[in-house]
Length: 298
Image (tube, rainbow, N blue to C red; front, side):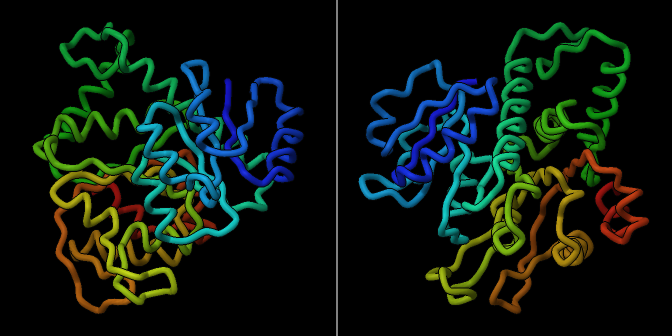
């Protein structure tokens, strides 16, 4: 995999280059600023790792210029809720705070690689026995699972997808949404494991002006943005316990409360969740709420 690193801090840039020397499967090309990168990025690159705070052009403007042509991971030493939210809405799958171990970055790269492989497969002509072009379905078992997904799609039930990483849970989530009556409404996905807890809460539920230092204006969360459509909560098993209680209340009451507000907001959202974790083991260890587990699949 060929990766571009865009980082204005020469010492940090060099440290990343050195860290990648132990991972021969990655070809790394570094750029000192986004403008230089924009001139030299081509189809041989698959992913971009970029800082946010850079003098000539900030990372968010850089991502807008890329317009989704590459998978992207944001790294920053000065995390803010607003930047995290903007990054996610620009298609960024992982938002890492500087100080992370190289293994954390490698895990993020592997997640992006799997997502790209799945997307590549689903863009090929279908070998399915059915007329749906969402899968290459050559086994009776996959046909059976797809048939079940179609049946579920016609309902408004919450769906919990279980399975190992890389089996296509995100593809099934999108498939269920596209074959539901909500297909013309938003489908918004969020990776619960990729965002720090203090950012995740505001990203999900939104916030009012003054709710925290960076909150210079009110902002709806993705649950509001997905109103009328579907939200895909990937890696739900990694959701912090404190937020599990708040999500459970949303599922029960069909409303949410933004950070810094006491006013509930009604929402109409279909919840699709996924995890590769052993949820029953997490419940036994009091790491996941049993009542939330029940709500996520009914």
